[in-house]
Image (cartoon, rainbow, N blue to C red; front, side, top):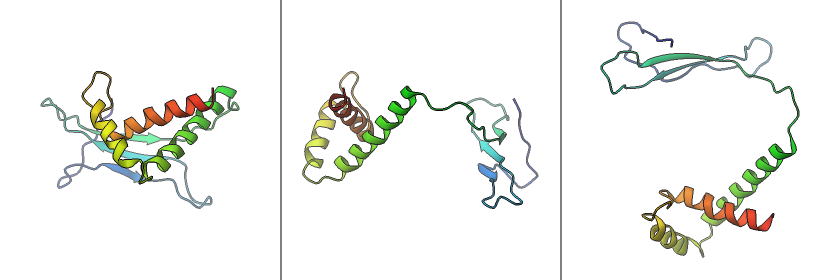
Length: 126
């Protein structure tokens, strides 16, 4: 595993150091990404440097992949609509809080929306 030692005065760097350019003439398609993680151990190997190179897909999407993408788009739209519907917010919050501490209960409201709207989507499209 690679590690990075920065110059004196720089404690850590986190994020993209170099991004792909938008103009095609002088830009490269690579991204240089640095991360910093505070380890639970006394190890000083918490800085990492990654070079991300985009990979072009060579095969067309399968029917299953199209279905998965369409479901994701549909459920995300349902969540967006439902979370902004003032007539449902109070009952949704009450239902979420009621199931939150049960076994297999959703711990976040977003997770609960994905479960409920995903079930609605599956019921409508099965």
